[in-house]
Amino acid sequence: MNSTNSTASILSAGSTLQALEARRAWRENEQVSPHFWVLISILGDLVMAVLAAYAAYWLRFHSIIRDFGNFDAMTFRQYGGHMALGSLTLVLVLGWQDVYHQNVLLRSRWVASKIAKGILVWTAGFLAITLALKLQPSISRVYVMLNGATALLLILGWRSVFMHCLRAPGRIEALQQRTLFVGWNAEAVSLWKTLKRDRACAFDLLGWVNTGSSEDGGPADESLPCLGELNDVEHLISTQAVDMVVVADLHGPREQMIALANLCEREMIQFKVIPSCFRVFVSGLTLETIAGTPVLGVTRLPLDDTLNVMVKRALDIVGAVIGLVLSAPVIAIFSAMVWLESPGAVFYRQRRWGCNGVPFEIIKIRSMKIDAENASGAQWCVKDDPRRLRIGAFMRKWNIDELPQFWNVLKGEMSLVGPRPERPELIAGFKHQIPHYNARHHAKPGMTGWAQVNGLRGDTDLSERIQCDLWYLENWSLWLDLQVMLLTFFKRDNAY
Image (cartoon, rainbow, N blue to C red):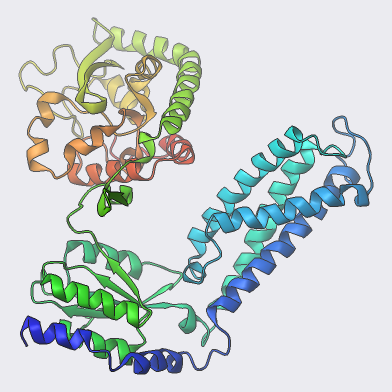
């Protein structure tokens, strides 16, 4: 069937009522709507917030810590206003974190992370506001901390029970988003694999339809069947209770895509598009208006925000000072051991690429023989490298050779966490060979990074390392930096 007929088929409005009735029939065994469960989640969180406030009050004023700190003894009634205000604002903060939406009811891990973040923000904000406004009676800071901790435990505990209820047979089908792919390409493969691994079963993957220009002929196995051609979408929507259409292939006629979008709008189906032309920093995509015309593009990443840069720099300075003080004796001991095994300079300076491609000299404790690259030239260290000193193997395993880089961090040339800096002579051609390679230089290089804690260090697949670096830049947060620093002590798989 030609594109004109395909477009006409998609634009046909005769089955609007049929599609709506099909979705109702699909969920006929479920007597309540998803909005009911959203309301239950709100009420449950509110109850847990009230219980958390009461538990915090009891722990603060009636447990063994009641004599800790200076405060005026108050009755439960006197503290009631604080408890009511705190419980209500906590639920509002969780709503601000978008946890009260029918499309996320089954996404337990995502919701749990948002709840944890929301409670942390609420704890800091509630304490700051009550102190700034000088509320009477004055609030105990210990009480606020206890309230945050108990709220986190109680709400997450209640949510686990709630999630078990939602996943009961006959109920989960009404909450899952039945998803249809239109077209197929590499980005569709990535999304499909991610949704398949979703243990929460938030998505029910129906299949895909061929647009005539799809890559690779669809999924490699039979778990996601091809359900037809583009002109079959309307029939599939009316018979398969589709909730979401994901367009992966935008190479078809423009009229067909417009018709498909209009069809989804009429049938009240979510219409999603995988932006295949954006292969990097997709999370930074935003829609803005320029002179009245909507424009889609990459605007900014987390570390493009000045406040985030200041927070990260503050962490770097504090961490670098502490690191230099604590590591000074270790650096001295291992420098002496290096000199005893191979007399000569114990510190090794090497030119690396920094933020925005600005070069700098990285400092390391020498782990190889003097002039180790005179014969071989610049190359990565490999397993059982003959150029390496005996003590060098131990230092590399435990990252001891990199301790002097705290000085690079203090100078502002590096960060504690970020993409590892590479040598210019080794990566001169990489920007032409590996897609998005230079995008990793949007941030300062780090002493450790997301790629390193995932085992991608030294002579490993550079493409995978680049993907990890880009994921880090798209998803940066202060908590992610702290997580990476902690994991660095336990991840040394490919440290040669």
